[in-house]
Amino acid sequence: MSAELKSKSDISIVLFLFTALAVFGVAGGGYFVHDYARARASVSWPAVDGIVLSQLDDEHAKVRYVYSIGGRSYEATRERMFLSRLFSEKERDYRPGEKVTVYVNPQDHGFAVLRPGGAGVAFILCSILSGLAVFFGFGGVFWALSRSSDSDFALAEDAA
Image (cartoon, rainbow, N blue to C red; front, side, top):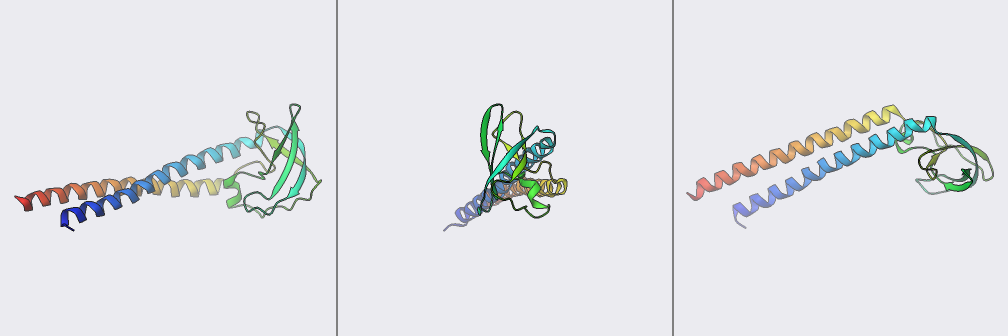
């Protein structure tokens, strides 16, 4: 393999990795902002009565419950928002048939939580991590592109 081809191959791999890191940071940051905004808004959502249908063993959904709003019944499994699960107390055990208060999104009645609110500390930490991923991702892309142009320049001088 020639030195030029090896250099371009190495730079392509580095560019791909740093680009993936930047994209992951942007996507993660967007998700965390959206989740935290919903969590904060859930505090003022209308509360309705619900009934626990079953306790689930699934890692992401611990409870299945039903509630009614606007003459329609809905079923959900969300106890709280994603960021609220990171730095908060242990999940509660629910018994089938237990009455619960359900906080329902007024714009989307199919989206509800049993425990409203968000975790500010989790949001700040996840936002910082996303920002670092974006910073190092774009920084790495610029660094790799500058190395690429330096190596192209050096290879052109060697050929001359």
